[in-house]
Length: 135
Ligand SMILES: [Zn+2]
Image (tube, rainbow, N blue to C red; front, side, top):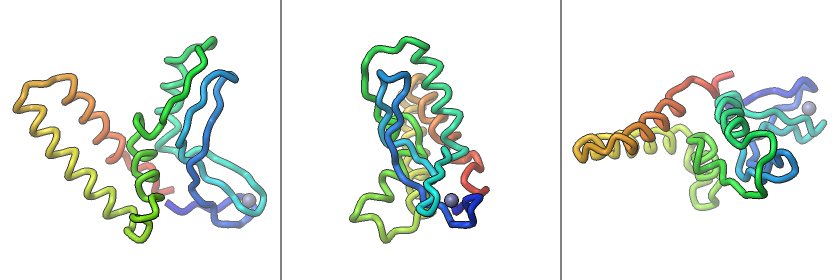
């Protein structure tokens, strides 16, 4: 998950608010931030979901506030890992635990024949298993 800035400084991941089209406030977007030169970069695994969200909002969105951590599993887990009580737990074990939890829910959704829920869970699992934070 570590990434170096072009200035040589290791970058931190911070949850930031992104304002889209002056109307939409998107909270908890994980963004690499350099504490030395203040360069920022959106995480690779987050970019596609953010682009999808923005394309759904269109060019003239209504005033609204969106919690990105409800839409993207990485944002959810990074928000969770930044929680003070969990800050000592390595992100890998939080991710592993979340995958187990999602797999349990997937079995449950299948036994209930809830296709919408199942598709949502498969989407979430796909977000997590995509090898995105390795660069
Ligand atoms: Zn820098």
